[in-house]
Length: 210
Ligand SMILES: Cc1cc2nc3c(=O)[nH]c(=O)nc-3n(C[C@H](O)[C@H](O)[C@H](O)COP(=O)(O)O)c2cc1C
Image (cartoon, rainbow, N blue to C red):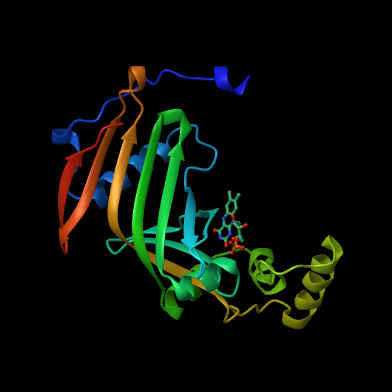
């Protein structure tokens, strides 16, 4: 029964004195630990956007860069999330690293990365992935899987070995406005440490009730 499934978390604890003063450093540390763990997709993050009707939408995307400015992921600018971000750049992001009993939540504001950043990442991808960005009109209704296979072949013939970045494909930078680090603890007395931004580069730390 689903209702009988429960786990007692006891791997680690968070103390304010051990948390980094800057949440970017804390996220960087936890990401490194997740990369060194047995997590299958340590860079996977649930990205939530809100549409014009105030309806939230969540989906997984992959973190491709963590810079001093924020978190970068890549996608189709014309798909559902792209349209939602055009109207409302506010997002929520969630990492869940199950084996470490950890969650990171953050809120932020997105902006498109420069064409140079998108080009740089696009051209680091294998040819089939680059073609895929042309093939998929993300989030549109399609008649069948074959439709994609045919488009794939057609774009392969069009471009040959030189596959340019589609203008509708690129990166978003998420500039964080708050971070929360969660560590599972015994008896549901979990640790939650919230960082809120006071001013550029200055963060305040609070402990939250689980
Ligand atoms: C593990 C995993 C990684 C994914 N990574 C990405 C990604 O980096 N970029 C992306 O656009 N979609 C990615 N997807 C697909 C998205 O979850 C989603 O289906 C797609 O972006 C369309 O979302 P939208 O219709 O809300 O725009 C990933 C899905 C999974 C399960």
